[in-house]
Length: 99
Image 1 (cartoon, rainbow, N blue to C red):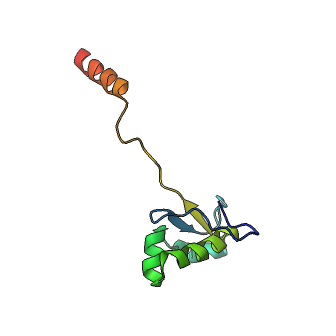
Image 2: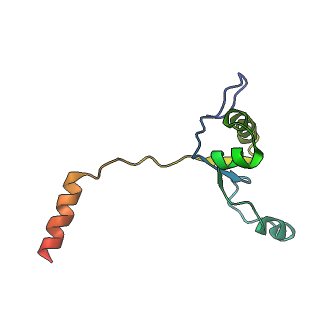
């Protein structure tokens, strides 16, 4: 969710990665390549908050505005299951036993 006209905040948490730059996958034109070579690595919202010495809530508002203006991208964490599927583990075990 990105900020709308009603002023909602983006759904960011402390581990969401913030990536600077536009989502355009094309390489930059030659004069801009040098400028882009020293680009900033992705930072979590917690790191941005720490570097700016601002509270999480303030950083969330700033990042929401930047997301709406497409100045940055948010990469949300991948949620994984706590336990692996038992049938998959059994299939792997049986396959290894047949070797």
